[in-house]
Every structure is written in structure tokens, then in C-alpha cells.
Length: 499
Image (cartoon, rainbow, N blue to C red; front, side):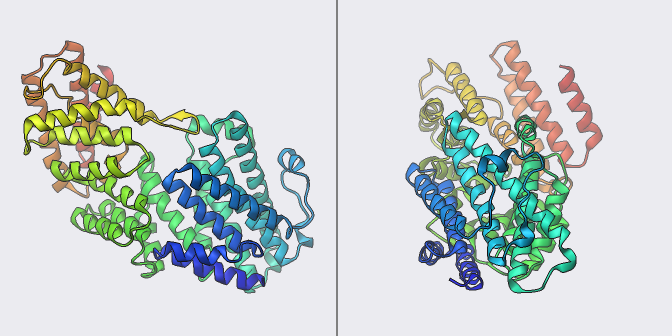
């Protein structure tokens, strides 16, 4: 198939995906996976997304099989290559003579790097063996070498660049891959980053963002919308989750403006807009409406629904709407396979906080759910999930406190476990400083009132009461910080540290 036609058809199919027409997008890409490098790339990408959404072994294996076939096809279109072992361990990195490559070979090189990255992600998440992990890291090293070589090639040939559509697609692709790679590497936790640095992998956050912005400006190219979405995901989710830098809301606004209504009914863009409206001014009612629009926009990818239900559970906890929060937590517990342990704990603490129902039935439900928390723990890439460990510890404590009590008796409660969990899941990052006092002030009053009641009826050991008091002070400081009262918040944080 003609290369330009291959790109245009793949672009059309990926746009269908962003507009929620998932099945049609996959069918169109699957037609030419045996002869088109871009159809193979797009098909591998969509199958990877489906596998990560479902986390079903069958979907993961199907995606890996399709990606391996795609890599074999693309290999036929690439230029002269070093052997894999040479490429991985060359001291000066990737050094193919790209000046001698045809446009088709350059595009094949780019697609090969992208598919290797997709394969590495699936390998690291699904293969728990040491061999699998090493294989995944070597693929990442190989991918980074290719991207670095292509990026150097672009820089060295800036004066000779042409304005053909194929060249624009190639340049946008290199900017996207190199930028995204740098951004991902720069966002990896320090403990893991040390091992990647030993393999020669370093990320530059500013470089990553600038290259993604550059890619997004190549209007009409295949990767331009994905660069825009990558920037939004980083700013609205990663930065919010990590919490060590300010979210660039101005950049997000420019990206939304640039998209200019494209994919306006797509589940992904609606979710991102919902999060943006909450972060930019605390427009919680509008945000809730956008989350629901995202849920109702499609029915095939239930996992997109689950992401919205998680956010809606958090927003309803902030609003102290316990029945609604429990409803969303129950949807997650019943439908999602990502972490039933966390969802069981979230549902339990929301039910326990809800004083509107039958006390006896609520106590029984909480007891059953708390006992399910340890049973439902999972492992990803051979590792336990830290948040599941925390939920298990708290659930076991609740069970120990209420070991001999009947459902009709009043149970002993953990102190504000909902807000403790939300903080550890970076949920407080949804509330930007200064922007939503109408949410935070009632929250602060509720936290103080709960501590007063808890302290009056405390029957636990002094150590337990002291721990709960520290949690109360910590949550107070968080709320005061959100209200802009930093001096008082700082003083409380210092007191918590001293104790």
C-alpha cells in the first residue's frame, strides 16, 4: 500500500477511536495489517489499550501476538540494521546512517520504535519473570536509542527539511515519540529511575513537553491529537497525582482551544474536560455533569466508565454525599477488575459514614466488605500494590476492633478513613489552592466535628488515639493549605512531625 494512503487511512481509523467508534476503528485497521506499516502500528496501539483496560490474559496475549507480527512486517521495510545486541550496547547509542534512508525506511524506523515501546509496556506489566522484565527493559533501551538517533537526524538536517506531507508526518512522529519518552522517563519514581539511569535512560521533562507541543502544532498529522492528549494527561493527571509542581492550566486551556471542539463527544476528551473544570476554579457541578456525559457517551469500554466513577466517588466524598459516593464505589467493586481490594475498602468506609440507612444492615455490609479486602489483593508485574497493602492493614484493624460485636451493636469506627484513603490516592490534588473554599470550608468543619466526637467516645489505647489525632491535624493542615492559609498549615505540619 502507498505510504501516504496508509497514513491517511490509519489517521481516519484512529480519529474514529477518539470519537468512541472503537469497533469500527479496529476493523478498519485490521484489514491491512499484513501489508501496511501504519495499519500494523495503529492496530497494535488499539489492542494494547484494550488489553490494559480489561487486564484479561487473552487480550494481552492477542495484543502481543499482533505487535510481534507488526514488528516482523516493519522489519522488512527498514534500512540496514545493526544486530539487536550491538544496538543495545553500543557506547555511542544508535548510529545508523539515516541520510541514506528513503522516506519509507525512515517511517518504518519510526513505526518500529513505537511498536517496540508498546511491546515493552505489555511485557513489563504482564510477564512476572526476571527474564520478562529484562526483556522489557532492553526493548525500552533499544526504543530510546532509535528515537535519539532519529531526533539527532532531524536536528542535523533542519536546513534540508522539505515541506512534503510525508516529511511533516515523519517530523511530527519523531517529536511525539522523543517528547513522550522524555516526559515518561522524567516522571518515573526515583527508586525505579536509578535502574533506568544505569541503562543509560534519562528523561528531561521540559524537553519532553516542548517536543509534544511542537508535534501538536503539526495540524492534520497522525500524531498531532495524540500529542495534545498526552500533554493534557500529564498536566491534569500525572502532575496532579505527583503533587510536586504546579499544573499548567494555561497550557491546558490553549490545548483545549486548539482542539477546537474536535472529538467533543469522545469519552476521553469529556473526562479530561471534567477534570480540568474541577481543577480550574472548582466547578464541581459542571465537572460532575461532564463525567456523566463521558460515561453515557459509549458503552463498549466500561473501563472508561470506571475511571469516571472513581472521580465521582471522590467528588461526592468531598461534598459529604455518602450515599452517592457509596453508589459509585459499589459500581467499581462490582464491575472493575483493576483493584477489588481498594474498591471493597472504599465502599465499606463510605457505607459506614452514611447514617441514612439501616444501621444493622450497614454494619453487616461493612463487616463483609472489610473481610473481602485481604482476599482480593492482586499483583502487577510480580509486585504487590502498595495501596492494597494499606487498605488490607486498615481493614484488618477494623475487623480486630469489632471482632466480637453483633451487627445490631454500634461498631467502633476508624477515624476519617475516607479522607485518609483519598489523600493517599492523591485525590486532594483535585482541589486546587484558593479555587474552591465553598468545598473546603465545610470539609474542614466536618473534620473538626468528627474529631470532637471521636475524642469524646475514644475507648482505644493511647497510642491509637494519638495516631488518630495526628491524622486529624494532618487533614486540617491539608484543608488550610487549600484555603491559602499556608502559615497556619505549615505550623500544624511541623507539630505533626515533632510528635
